[in-house]
Length: 184
Image (cartoon, rainbow, N blue to C red; front, side, top):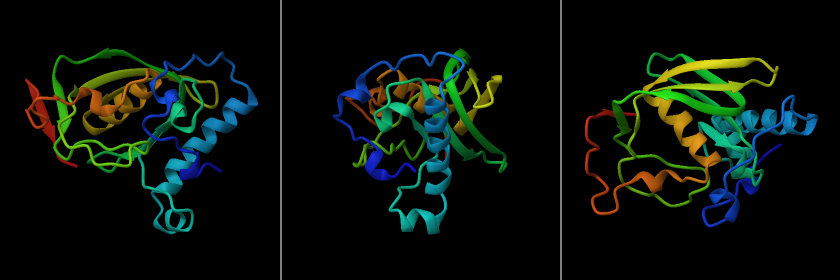
């Protein structure tokens, strides 16, 4: 079981590396790691389990955050219509995106960042992501709004990018051009 002790923090070199592709089919170890990542995210949202294991609530995690430099992400989040997006993917890749941008008005947080980093993080309003599930099925997901932001945040981790790299240094609360604000 993955716990907060397994989550590495900003400053750790693995967080700045470009993660390696997972050769498909994945090994049993890779499958187990990805399953555990999804369980961790789900457990972190359960108040009882989170309290018992001192988990910080999260909606996504990338393998580099547990010091595994491989292209794997797990996401468990609902959109504003209460539709659940629960995915554990190998080699997720953004294959297309909108011109329109968006950002969370509350800013973004990260399980690997223990401090509050204020500012707007510009993201694409819509993305299409391709990846491979634990069952070996290739999926193509068309995502928008919060869900698109979560996938972009986690895929950034696979490329050694932290969310605050996108924040405007001079003016953190400068509204990104042509971007739609999203309240969450």
